[in-house]
Length: 224
Image 1: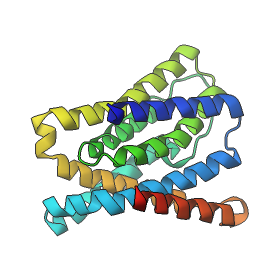
Image 2: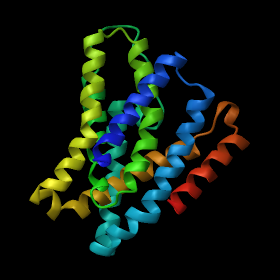
Image 3: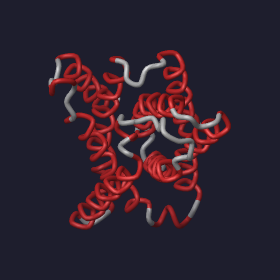
């Protein structure tokens, strides 16, 4: 049951953080984002990647991972990089960002698949979603969308990861192609995590606090 509840809790925590801070990016959110990127990347490399290589032919695995990277690049073209901490409020109009919404839902849906094979991945998704949910909620608050639109956006976005997990657990089609989907998701995780880790802060400074939280994230993923 935790596999379904924890991603939902992560979104709820992110919404609370956004409601309390009222800022687009606090220092704490930036550090949590760096920690989540390191933790997610390490879990993918330590647990998910060996599992996929065990079930698929090596060159085929690499191909699907590259497909995942390319898919995430395409999704970010429409989502503007919200998945790794970029969010810009639309203050010019009230038109609902359907393309951004669909892109984020696809990303969130695919995140749920690897949770089927490896329970530890739920913690990576959990920690990844908290700062992303905080930034996304702040983006929605600062835009001119109605409360109904904002609530609908967040509810559907929240449901996507548990839906992906449910499908990966309960359908024959997903079981047959699960390793392929997981390889694609690894590519998505690699792109997001490395983008978070290698992006520099103000003045292109890679400060000590960011380095510490990255090392902490990798260490926790190793010993989990």
